[in-house]
Image (cartoon, rainbow, N blue to C red):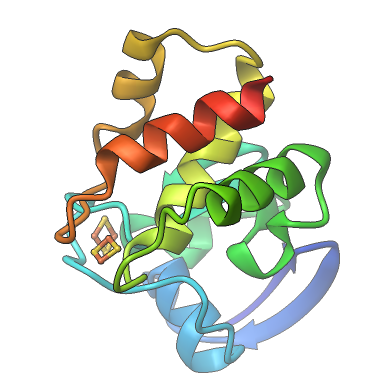
Length: 150
Ligand code: FES
Ligand code: FES
């Protein structure tokens, strides 16, 4: 079945089953591999993208539910004002360890700051609680979000 979806400002036509998760459309059909697969069950946050500016788990977002929504992925988040600040802070604070979870972390963090420019610690914890990091970079993530918020 054909779907037209808007990703990072460009409309793509894809021919997939209606229940295909957005994650696999991004990675396997469009070759956008910055968005990662971790659990496939909305439990780890590795697959986080923005759907109409809201952080969403693409592993459990079927393509037929995306409609005309604007999807933003890690490939384009740096071009947004908040995403650019987040990525700079990530580099300044040397957040990344193995890196596998980090595109999802950055997408959740940028959605947080876009909706709440001055988050408290508890706001940060609440927004980031669904993003798991096996390398334990949580403290640097929080520092980087605070830096970007300044
Ligand atoms: S792969 Fe989607 S939340 Fe883990
Ligand atoms: S940096 Fe390795 S899983 Fe987060």
